Amino acid sequence: MLTYSLTLKIGVGQMPKQQSFGKNAQYSNDKNARQHMSIVKVHPEVKEVLSKFELPEEVGFGKVMAPIMIEADYADGKWGPIELKPYGPITLDPTAKVLHYAQEIFEGLKAYKTDGKGPFLFRPDENAKRFNSSAARMAMPDLPVESFVESCKVMTAYCSEFIPPNSGETLYIRPYMFATEESLGIKPSEKFKFLVIASPSGNYFASGSVTVGIERDAARATPGGMGAAKTGGNYAASLLSANQAIAKNCQQILWLDAVRHERIEEMSGMNFFAVIDGKLVTPALTETILAGITRKSIIEIAEAEGFQVEEKTMIIGDLIEDIKSGKCSEAFACGTAAIITPINALQESDDTQYKLQNPEGPVAAKLRKTLIDVQEGRKEGPNGWVVKINPPV
Ligand code: COI
Image 1 (cartoon, rainbow, N blue to C red):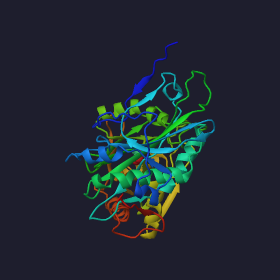
Image 2 (image 1 turned 60 degrees about the vertical axis):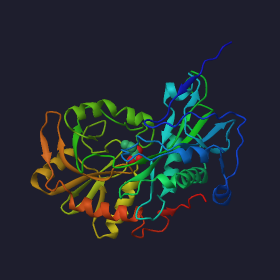
Image 3 (image 1 turned 90 degrees about the vertical axis):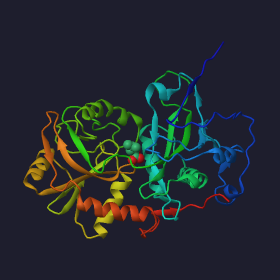
Image 4 (image 1 turned 180 degrees about the horizontal axis):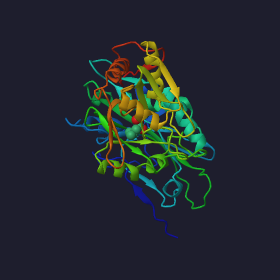
């Protein structure tokens, strides 16, 4: 019987030439990898593809891919070896469960290298823990925290030479896992692939502030659903509304709760903050909100800087009244990609706008400066937040 397999191209933008990478390829433990990162096996072609890579002057966000990637497979109840290899297409059987039932999770974190300092990773252990809590919700296996963190360290170490150097520019690292078992039965896969790819990137948003459409009808996540997991389905659910928002000149959507359409939740890939009566306010976490690591870090930074922070139920009608009266002086989006991006206005589908008093966001600007100063190594953060990576020798 003939079996056909599907070649899936991962990533977008610059693709290095496909490398021959057969089952019999010999792996060597690079000297540095042996010294610091022995759980990752380094393919002999890695050095060559790295030496041929040129960083374009304009990188954009998530468009230029590093010429290497990490790969590991899960089968028979255990993870196989973690390999660093040339970036390139992967082969999936057309029945692979991820293609039909969306059993997939991902993370996003950044490596920083500015003013000749770094590279640094920011709280990679938090991403590792969230990866496993997403995995649990999606009936996927745990990946040891050490394997996740080491994989991100190795990618950073080997990509160190082409982390763009300007403040705000980074190596955006995307670890992800998906179901590869070949079968159409609706049951959890027993085979998975873990990949880490990375993209030298600039700012996520082209402009300094964003207009945010209020989504009054569609819902991103429901009680009992998977809204707190970082899984592709939640992002897929946001795309139709994203299209409608773009048509109305909005760059983001503000999601409300699925039942009453009153409670503010999040913004698809970003969390929401407002400054009300000088206090920093953000929706309290629920099962329909992704627990942002940037969100959590901002709360700690803001408290250390003397701001009062409140995590509470935020009602959209109240927020609009507070914007109109000036009690709410600014609002911002936050996330790994967005960092802290001020919101200039909220907008209804009939184009009614509620403009923020301070669209440039002085509180957002202050917190953003501290956060970036910590991430880029100019300011000391709390213990364990910033992890220095040693480049390969
Ligand atoms: C991230 O900030 O890492 C995200 O997952 C958001 C995505 C829009 C890039």
